[in-house]
Length: 160
Image 1: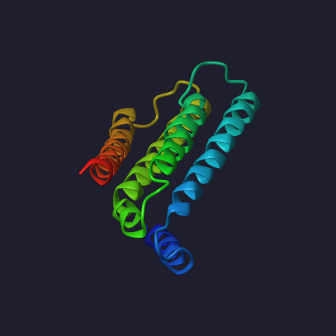
Image 2: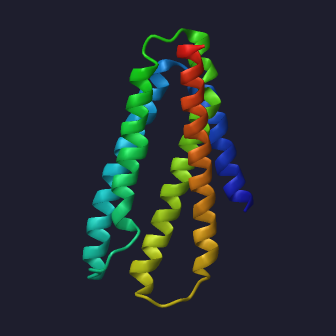
């Protein structure tokens, strides 16, 4: 646990040092990162299930689509919707977009964990699956809150 906290601290401090201010191009950068995550997820699914000879449906099969649609395409839409925003308008979207992105990452990570368990476990019930599904639900809730909050902010900036 302490090592995980240290890794998180490194990411946060590194982000603050290298990125600093939230700009419009950050949204495009997040879209690109989600594109890469989706493509890697698709390749991982194909190669991992092929290695284990696994042919049944698993959570790994939906990582690719979730990353590309929720991460890449939605971020591109947000990028296009906010194209003419001023610096302070973009800055107001920082928290909701980060919450949305955190929800995507949390959800995709849980899908990967569940999918790997399905493939490697080969149907054996060695862990409490309901607990993992509950944690995955938290990722979906975070994702939904961030997305709704972002859309509300965009609506307010454009129409109020």
